[in-house]
Amino acid sequence: MREHRCRSFGMEEKLQGQLRACGHFLHYNMGEKAGQARILSALLESGTITQRELQDILEVRSGSLSEILNKVEANGFIERSQSENDRRQMEVRLTESGMERASRLEGEREDAAAGLFACLNDEEKKTLSELLDKLLDGWEGQERGRGRGGRGRGRHMHGRSGDEMQ
Image 1 (cartoon, rainbow, N blue to C red):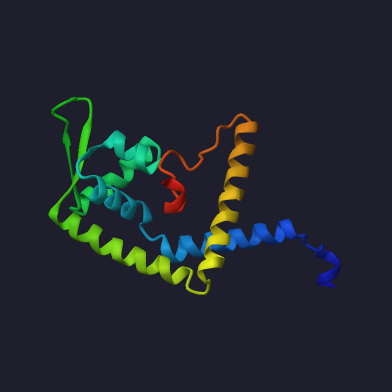
Image 2 (cartoon, rainbow, N blue to C red; image 1 turned 120 degrees about the vertical axis):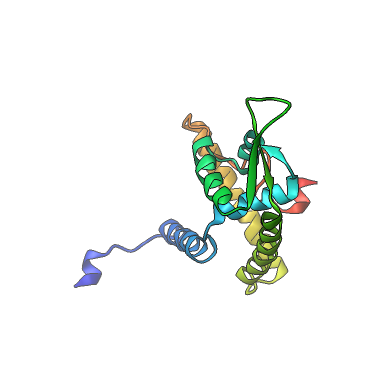
């Protein structure tokens, strides 16, 4: 009886389901406190920066960043202080324990990323990356066409390979 009520899914629906499953896997298996980890990583790379600069790097809303920064600060990983150059700005920097945590997370992230794609050879990884870039570019074009602007991948080229950024 069940087969009479279910329609056959086309390739587009199958792909949509596969992407949803990938997102679900990444979120629930790799994404624990991902926002906090991204902040620590950005600060490890950038040093002391303003909260606005951090917001631009991470491409998040001001309110979202403030919420996560409060948690990271409560854990003792960052310090915030008023900028001496511009009293309207807050500067954010890693504490010593924040530097240790960020370094440890960076190593864990690299190991996890390698594990995610261990079943693919180098050529398959390259092909997958090219196809995902093409898909994301198409989606961004659709968003702009609808007048929404889209979130995009921004000027920091998140998700782009090192070869494309050179």
